[in-house]
Amino acid sequence: MAPMIRRDFRLESFRINRPAVQSLLLACSVLISRHPLAAQNLVFQGQASAWMTAGESRHQAGIRYMPALFAECLLPDKWTAAAEFSLNAAGSATREACEGRLKAYRCWMRAARTRFEFRAGLQNIGFGPSVMFRPLMWFDRIDPTDPLRVTDGVWALLARYTSPGNSSLWIWALAGNGELKGWESIPSDPSLPEWGGRFQMSVPRGEAGLSLHRRRADLEKGLLGALPLGSGTAAETRGGLDIRFDAGIGLWGEAAWTRRELELLPGERMFGAGMDYTAGLGNGLYALAEYFHMDVSGLPEGSFSLYALLVRYPPGLLDEVSGILFHDPLHGAWYRFIRWQRNFDRWSFLITGFFNPEAMRIGPGFGNENLYSGKGIEVMAVWNH
Image (cartoon, rainbow, N blue to C red; front, side):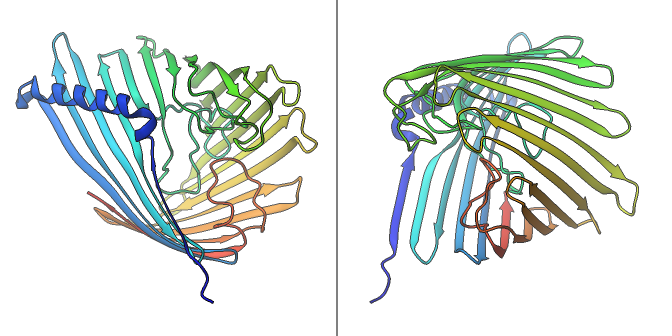
């Protein structure tokens, strides 16, 4: 008997956030219609990608198209208004299943002046100097091995002010985000608001920042959104510190801690440090190294460390070769990625080889555990318009 192939198509984000999407689209239409075309910038662009992955554990073929509409116009008193609406339409097929997904990727409006910005809608909020392992990865799950850096956004209001001395103050409020984001082990209650802020300032030869966030974790969705922890919610507070400066080589550090009103999982502590340097060899050899440590209270193997090394070299104007190495000393595991990439005006072609353990324990955002476990190769083509 031939194996049964499962087919699954998901339409996400529009059902829960339909009023927000409709309101932003209406505001975008008003923005376009009320101002003369001479003062407008209306751009339609997109990115299409296709890939094939052959690994020891799983084979997959996939496609993705991300169309985006961006509008911007001048307002009185040196203000500008802008809006973006983009989609993430993706499909993949393996021997066992065919899956598809259509969801809003970005949907926001922005009002900005020289030193002030206010943005509302589905957006990406990211900060901190770390590249591979990011203690301040609070609102996204960017995979550092992903050349396209695709990540879901959050529904939020963000206000940002930059002083003449280049210090900046961020204030944000989130609502309607019920999926795991960043390093979260318990999803947020989407019906309750989250809020926080960040202060960033210049220091000698660099920048430093202090961040804070408050939310209520949904215990009914439970650990990793699958294992119930009880009823109701638990208050959670996050804090973070970061610094980056140039001492001939780039140096940075990040520290974050989480405290929640829950005996079973009271919190986490994270620390990361890194450095990078471009050596004057040939066309420029770039190297980056990072260290990460995490302590999770309440778990038997809650303390672990990770190391990362990235090396990148462009042998020519169109080509780039890079390699990424991760090490998990707790489990004695090594993760290896090597990539060749050729870039044209609109096209990019990538070939990635990977040699990883069968069980991947790097952390959230680092690819598909089944797809990239073991040894394998991935071929990808990307078209931008």
